[in-house]
Image 1 (cartoon, helix red, strand yellow):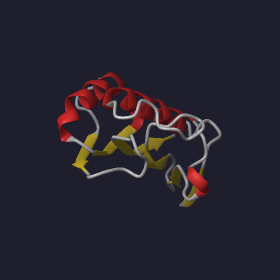
Image 2 (cartoon, one colour):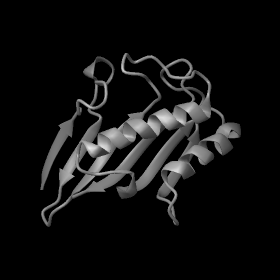
Image 3 (cartoon, one colour):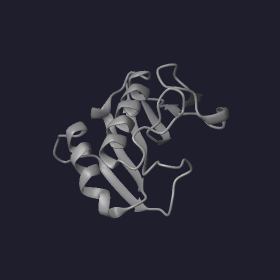
Length: 135
């Protein structure tokens, strides 16, 4: 089993290079497990997209996640688990609506959602971590 940490060029580098976007575990029998760091809705300069807007931020986050997965030969269809942090559970319907567009299958991936008092960037209302597989 081989492990690698990666920051694909398809997504802006993490803030201050403090962490890797992707931890990849290549499995002995083939394939890989991908563990993505929590993603927030930022543009390529690291500025929060649509401050306070759950739906817009969810769309941006799933776009970023899709790019990170693609860099490892994977995609949203290979997502096993989503871990979601929101600053207001009252915004959950907006998040759920966007999430259904990106994960239309039944059943959708396993999921955990937690309300938190705040996220590390002002204006960010959502952070999503993903576990997925790759070929």
